[in-house]
Length: 203
Image (cartoon, rainbow, N blue to C red; front, side, top):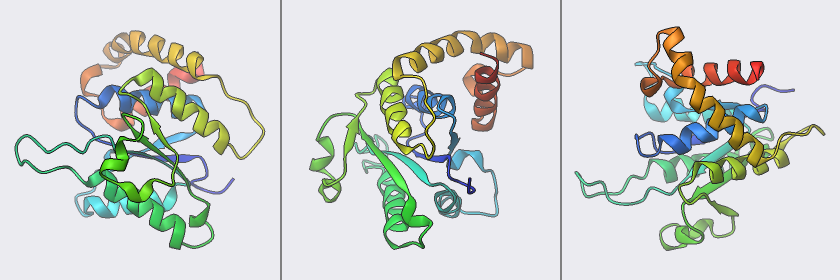
């Protein structure tokens, strides 16, 4: 299998309010046998954020893009456009890139059905899925999309089974972190994905 075939770029907010959705999607990705990738995995002061994002987008065949955060920032009064920008980069690579880049597939998420039509109508031809800010819903949507993205004939558990496994992982995570000297509330992305991978392998 070519590099990046099973790597999934996650384009989403990184604030505390969104974290339950983010972690649920990361778990679902790994449970399905794929690898979650994010701009927060790289800590290179010599690269700008946009360069980090571009490098990951170029590598990954698959991308999940959540455009549910469009409200004005309470401090600046301006909306956050990072997620739509990164979605545009991914779609641009798919449309204008080399043959490998044109194999990209993406999942676009919003919190409500058809809400995106009020602020980003140009993507109306895409199948936008609504997670309604529910981690279990996000898990089901990601699972079903990844099942269709599989390049082989393998099977993966259903969304309800993955959500149940995620609830078990969450319940055990504080003890796991305590044994390893980590803080469950302050896990770096690479710590989180490593613990998820180990837990899934042993369960």
